[in-house]
Image (cartoon, rainbow, N blue to C red; front, side, top):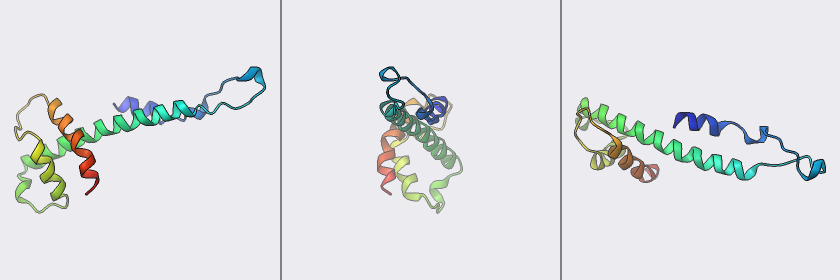
Length: 108
């Protein structure tokens, strides 16, 4: 994901192309830029979902449910959908659940 983000961050406008046999000197590559933006948004969502899972697991290990933390509402919503099992296991389902939760957390 991070390499996709790095690649998507490169300006498409740096590319050049000869169009109309040299009669035109500009090709905007706007459709490619739009595709890269969409790919970057998807990749960012996955990275944020991973960060959310890691943060919730870390706070659970510190028993944060008993603490008054600034992001309490978001933490409670995430705890409601993420598995409470802190063992070493595949986190694929948790990352997907976190990704699905992100739009509602954006409204907080």
